[in-house]
Length: 220
Image 1 (cartoon, one colour):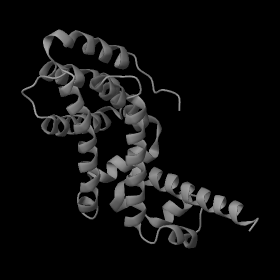
Image 2 (image 1 turned 180 degrees about the vertical axis):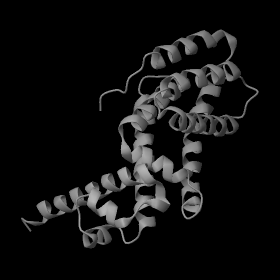
Image 3 (image 1 turned 120 degrees about the horizontal axis):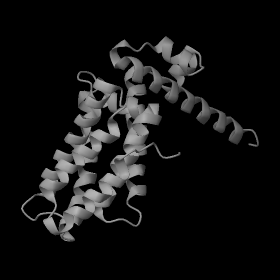
């Protein structure tokens, strides 16, 4: 029994190394172009070890999407500590932007979830979960008078998730995410003006400016 814990730890570390290596490959090449041999090499593993932990490329991709989803949800939860609902979304979007710049698993997971084909059906659930989490934040914001009452929280959450996704995709295509923070400042300027009552708007616009002007990724 004394050797089981170290062995389990090594197994966990090998699996994590494979996930990180696969994320770097998927981030560079996408799902269709990524090869399992390249992933094994990137993860410092043999093909046998890769198949032991992930019997197919699809299962490996879904594991990365699941881990990405967990990391982004943890960011949103951390952003909500001591903040009101809209501040939570502002700070959460900054935290996810940081991850898109610094974390290959998050970049790969989001890229994979956007690809059509093999992964379309299983990733549908991840997007529904993400939209559902944002809906809960908006429902709280409506209850606290931070949003205009003529919007449905579910409609707003779907719109914000779609707008955030489009903003970072276009930023990546045009500038390799070099203008991501500036693009998010513009995005939030438009979104906030459309959904926040006038008596609360200036404060949230100031929050967005403080977050995204001259922003750098927060230290991990």
